[in-house]
Image 1 (cartoon, rainbow, N blue to C red):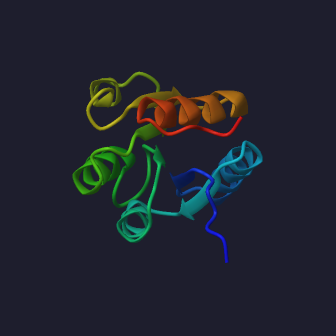
Image 2: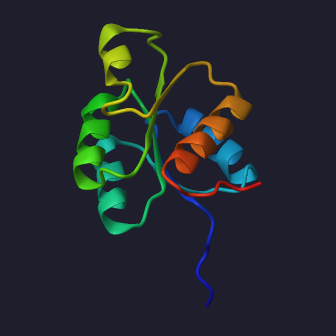
Length: 131
């Protein structure tokens, strides 16, 4: 069986509806999406699979997105992280840019902006996003 060569996106979002919508957008854009409903679940997927880009929501119960992003960078430092936040330009979110987060998107996220941000993050790490 041939290996799926699409770029793998780990999508961490606790809200079922948002996770499904974001997964649909990324799948339609040509990415293979591995969804997770929590930071802990996302880290398990990251440890078990080859991931090209991580997309995580900031405001999640338990392990929040910033903590998840820090842990993801510790596990896979070369994997870019796109943070999605409904909290706007909070200081901790702004400070995460360039450290835990390669890209910060503010909700509501335009579907084209989400797909473009994932593509830019992948391209910055030498991966070629879908055309």
